[in-house]
Length: 515
Image 1: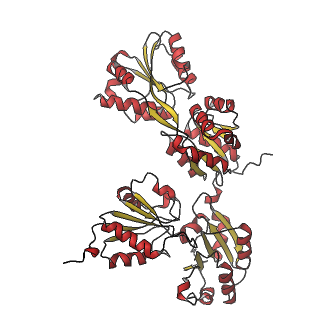
Image 2: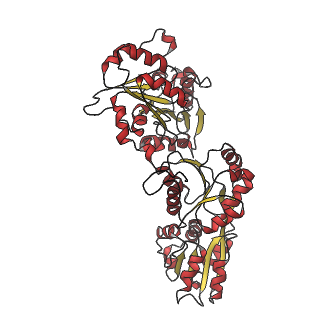
Image 3: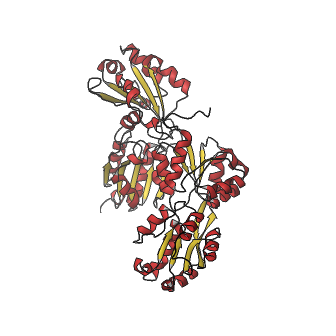
């Protein structure tokens, strides 16, 4: 009979998580995360990669010097066991599995257990961290070779196996992984081996993350500079004349919001757009929605859809309203053609874009993206008075628009589609975010978000300045005692991001001092 313990029914994918920036994760890696049954991940894999994962999660640590990390033998046994249970397993490893990641050891264990596996390379930190610091590891005329070496040798091997004297004479660029604690010993060995003391050097901590920190020195001053800055792992150290190129090609740390920690509280529609736009400009994003969208009883909108032919105007006040309205429209077996006889107004460009994506071009898009702006635009027309209007909105929305349309002689059917409720599940995370401090800004995109923050966080919410999407939200924030430091000139996500950038940076790109 075959050995049942060696029978493999699943498969393991040894996937490189990259250096930290989720944008550097491979397409193949994302595909596998979306279809696997289990994920066994390292401490240095960005947690953002695991968001929304439907698989079972196994945290095995694997961070240098971390006594809480699982033993390698236990990790090998875990991935073998999961595969033998018939599961598709992603073994998510920081950087590249085969660059100081012990991925080959795990592959050997899988091969010995007759478990099928696949290797998915990742971007290694030894190249990515220097690149994000503006340091190329090779450069024509400066360095034509690069050596990658671990500064954390296996103590079980006994005597050191790295010939630092040979590396000191090799020329080119030297990139050290996991070498912070051993840096004094390494530098001493390099200097003793003949490496010139004034050779440029740099240490990059949390490379490719928004909290990246770069220290530039020379070999003889590197240890003191790293100690003075308090750098601890994870750090990539670069030694060689390529470090001097940082003076002209540094880019990541030059982005306008680099070093700014911004809380994004927006729920549902627009969440990724706001976070992505701020992140693209260098901000360190903390995303903890303060509210969530809760659909209401669909009966009223179903009644309205049943008599769509009676409406001359349909007014939508948000992307959420469009999405919920459209879901009911499709449930009724209808599409954009059902709105052909009506004119449509959208409160702003995001709402208009949401309509257009469904085949409906808004007839009215106001200059001001608030209810007052929609009312002004409709008051200026001669085809509104005496008409019947379907007003698709949120529960508790201000009544300025329906009152104004009624005053024009229109008959308005107000149909709330959803309510914004406090996201209690995030309460502790929100409170911790504020009590930990160090927030540069808190973004709020609705009055309901303001109320939710005050409800959940309490007085601590006043510890950080607020960036508001527009005057209505600002008024709610000020009424709650918050410091509104930024208000968007246009009540849109791009407008809010532009206002935040302007708050921190002047026209020349220099950080404002407040003088």
